[in-house]
Image 1 (tube, one colour):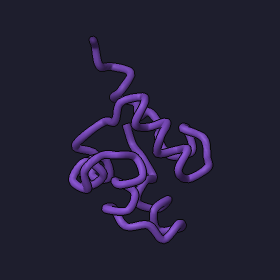
Image 2: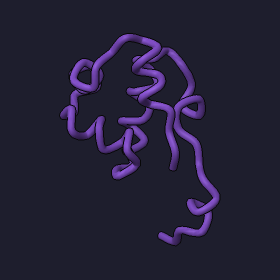
Image 3: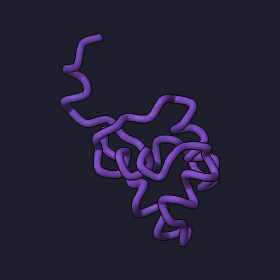
Length: 71
């Protein structure tokens, strides 16, 4: 899953640490999401979208390879 989290943070003048505090996770979690090492839970993704007053799909979007993943 790709995301525009870093861009959203920049537009809102938020550091990773500030965003992390707002959504109650560590700065490292925000960093991991930004570099695509971690896919956030639905709850965390919704909290992030809420902080930026935007929709979930404006920050997070599926990639072709996501459709191939089996659960």
